[in-house]
Structure formats: structure tokens, C-alpha cells
Amino acid sequence: MSTRKTIAKNAGALLISQLATWLLSFVLTIFLPRFLGSTAMGKLALASSLWAIGTIIVTFGMDTFLTKEIARNPARASELFGSSFLLRIAMHVVVYGGVVAYLVLLRYPADTTLVVCIVGISSLFWELIGACQATLQGLERMDLMTVANILGKGVNTVVCIMLLLLGQGVYAIAIVGILAAAVTLAVQLRALSHQIPLNMRVNWATGRTMLRSSLPYLLSGVFLVAYAQMDVVIISLLVDEKTIGWYGAAGQLFATLMFVPNVFITAVFPTLSRMFAQSPDALPRVMRKSFDWLLLISIPIGLGLFVTADSLVVLLFGPDFVQSGPILSLMGIVLILTYLNILLGQFLTSTDRQNRWTLVMAIGTALTIALDLVFVPWCRDTFGNGGIGGSLSFIITEAGMVVYGIAMLPKGSLGRANVWVAARILLAGGVMTVAAWLVRPMFTALGPFGIAVPIVVGAVVFVVMTLILRLVPHDDMAMILSVMRGLRDRISARRLRPEQGSR
Image: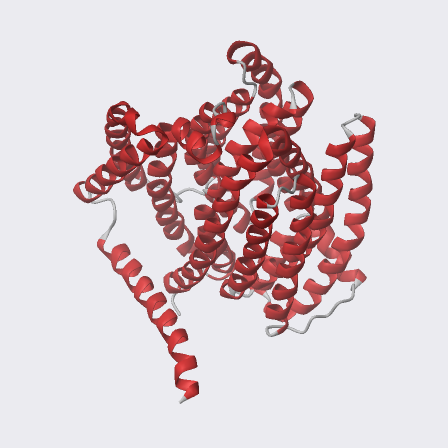
């Protein structure tokens, strides 16, 4: 199978999974703020941020190491997986104690501490799920992750909504997370067992080598997660939990839109790693094409969010979250830059330049923390919303990382053709934004539902501009249509199997 078809197949399978899980996450994202309120949402947001940082320490960069090593040497998959799986359990116990000590020392409220402790239990399962997914990714069998992800997310969404309708609060929602994670892990392990023997023991020589080799990825991951999550921790120290709730609600919507680059990168990363080892001359072609596509996708999503954020949060969450609007609007700009940075970081990692990207993340993390300490209190005093400061910090640091990341790429990775494509995409996005912005005030009589008008107008304008400016090459369009037909045929075949078996 050709490189393009391999990437397309994996991306197609992941797209099905991510679309399903995105829809489930989106539904839950609507319910949680409305039923829990901004203060309880602040507790969940803080717990998620603290355990995102804790999880990156537990996994120790092993996910990236597993994917790269297994993609290059599939015969070692069982040995590497088993050692990583058991190491994570031991390391989680240590980190759990550290998180509890932090909460006690800084005198967080008792109810907040309890929520963080409950979420910490589900985090153990997700850390183990990470080992399964990294192994399947290295084997380039991302299609096997689909059922587990959809089932786990489905359990979480359905049970949480039922409990919310029954009047349950934040503790119950946190406990459901444990159930959903356990279901996901069980299904992931079953799928993986059909690919490799599940060797559940630690080979200490392999474990030491793994930890040592994963250290650069750990450093990169620590800075990445600290960069993404420290704003919530800083906000929790400088303002109240209500503001964290505003910021967390906007952040949840922002996070649901990250499925696009995650699908793409998850599909392309093992291919990039294999190509770097086998045919490095082909890498620039993949990078150039990936850059164009992520920019084409991110511009309409990010600028569309910038235009519609104020109405969107009121429609989804209610008037208690109106202050999430300006935060989410600025996150629309952050989204465009983040899509590109995800690609740049994974490309540099796949070509064994992770130390350079780690340096970028270290600088970005330090700069973000410094900017948060300035912008959060300033926005709190000026606008009555310290969460806006977090978004402003991200815009500055993400923009700097894009510039620096492009400068670090190997010569020839991007060229003048990419500049020309980027200029046309930005033109299309600019026209779309102006059109959507102009029609936005005309439909205020429709209330929050008037948001549909600028969305439809913007989408139509961007599609028309895409066609006029010929932003999608003919061969890429043919490949997309081919993948869509293949997915349609696979879905049709699965529907026919039970009928054929019953005859």
C-alpha cells in the first residue's frame, strides 16, 4: 500500500472515531455547564489541568517512544508494551501522592480536593490506555482504537447526562469518568491482544532503556502540558473558581475542535517516522502537503469561532457563561496557530529533532506563565474577566512558536509554493470573516439562534473562495473521494454481513 493510501486509510478510520467521540463530547460539553454551573465547572477544570500535568509525568514520554520504536521494529511490540504498562502503574502511585500534597499545602477547599482525587483515579486508566493506543499507532492499526474510544465516550456521555437530569452533582460526574475509562481500557486491551501477545511483565533492562530514551519526549511533553494547563492553575491562584469555570467552558469547546489535527497527526506520525528511517528524501513532500491542508482546515474553523463565540456560549451554556464569549473568541485565533504547531512539533519529533522542539516548548512555557501573571490580573481589573488574559497569552506564544518552528525545519521542508497557498487561504478566510461579521447584527431578533446565519454565510463564502482560488489540487480531491467511497463500501459491507449470515 502506498504512503498516501496508508495515511488516508488510517486518517479515515480515525475520522470516524473522532467524529463520533467529538459529537458525544460536544453533547456533554453542552450539558455540564448548564447543570453544574460555573463554580463546579471550575473545580472540574482545575482537576483536569492538574491531572494533565500529572499524566505527562507518569507516561514519561513513553507514548512517543513506543510509537516510533514499534513502527520501526514491530517485533518488539509485546516486550515494549508490557514494560511500559506496568511502569505506569508504579509511577502513578508516586504522582498521586504528589498531587494530594500540593492541594493540601496550598489549602484548596476540601470539596475541590475531593474532585481532584476522584479524577486522579480515572487518570490511571487513561495513562494505561495511552500505552495501548501508542502500540496500535506504531503498528499502524489505528482503526482498532475506534470501537474502544466510541464506547468509552458513549458510556461517559450517556451516564453523565442521566445523572445530571436526576440532579446529581460534580462528584457523581467525576466518578462516571472512572467507569468510562475502565470500559475503554478493557476494549483496548482486547483489540491489542489480537495483534500481539500481552506480555504483562517488566523487562527491567528494556524498562531502563525506555525511560532513558523517552526522557527527551518527557521534557517536551512536560513543557507542552505545562504550557497548555498552567494558565488554569495560575487563574485558580489569582481569581475565583467562577472565572475558572468561564475559562474552562471555553477551553472545553476549544478542545473539541482539536480532533482534526489529532486525527491527521495520529495517522501521519508513524509514517513520518518510518519514512525518516527508510526514505528521508520523501519527507519534505509529506510536510508540504500536510502544512497546506491543516492551514486550509484551521482558517475557517478558527475565524468562524472568532466571529460567533459570543452567541455560541450563550446558546450552549446559558447566560451564566456570557463571559466565556470573549475568551473563546480569542481562542479562535489560538486554534489556527495551534493546528500548525501540532504539525511542526510532530514533524520535528518524527525526524529525531525533538530536543529542538523541547527548547521551543520550554521557552513558550516560561513566556506563557510570565504573560499570565501580567495579563490575568490586568484583565480581571480592566474587563472583570481574568480568563481573557489566558487567551491573550496563548496568542502571543503560539505565534512565536509557529515562526520559530518553521525556521527550525530542515531546508526544503516548506517552499514558495506553500507561501502562495497560505496567502490564498488567508484571503479566503478574510473574505469569509468580513461576510459573516456583516450579517451578524442583522439577525439579532432571532436571539441566540441567529448564530446559524453567519455560520452558513461564512461557510458558503469560504467554499466559493476555495473553488475560485483553486485551493484543493485535483489529485488531492480524487484521493479524498476515493477514501470516502472506500469508507462507504466498508460500512455497507458491515451492514450486509448479518443478513448474509442469517440466510
